[in-house]
Length: 343
Image (cartoon, rainbow, N blue to C red; front, side, top):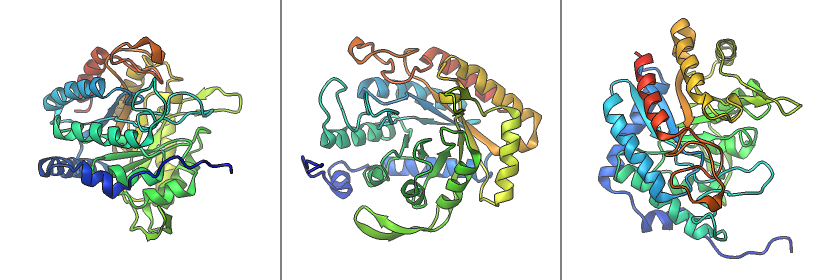
């Protein structure tokens, strides 16, 4: 046999029953969901900042980060809505390396998917219960939605997943803002087709059942840059890129045109310090063009307590073990600058 079945995983309902969200936390999340909805639909002129580690590899370090972010949120609440990135599964280009908290709650131990599901839920619950900040996560595996559907206020569909029919159909059933990234090729039309599919009702097989969805009117674009056929990064956050996207958006007649600019990945060529400059350029361009101001609803930033990245064996507290991240001091300063430039 090609498959060796190791263990039956608990169902989403079983995990949610074992680790329930408090009524107070449910109210916090409902309020945040509405704030984000109002931004995506244009009812609010606040600006989204989706910020946090490349991957959530350590519960205490991530909670330390979110606690700091919650204090900053209080200071910028009139202009910004901050959403902590608590990304629990890490896509790997060649299949090797650390695959995230959901696979390895301890990055130096063997995979344990049951413990991973519990670790994910516990961490994302703490973000809401203790710090009042419902998180964002990437839905790398669509069937995992049920484990966290009551916790997430923002979902991303990644560059390698956005062309996949199952991801598009599943996103059509999400009830929160969902960003569809451009594929690694950088092709805008692929991304816009995925938004079209996610915004429409779908009928398909999901988690062993035949299902129908109502469509997700909050599905929107995330620009993260692309890579050409020679493997060279091609950014797509510039003025001309967003103007072109605006034209393509309206030609397709999609609901609630919106884009989040991912300041890292191929937009920065993973030069994490460049995120500061990229974010400032995006905010500057919003001032130059009403169309860009209306379309660009936020930015995505990879940030952790310590700048850069490390190998798993180095054990530096709050430093990424995947892609390099902006450090906390620079991140905090950048958030205040975003608030000022968003006025």
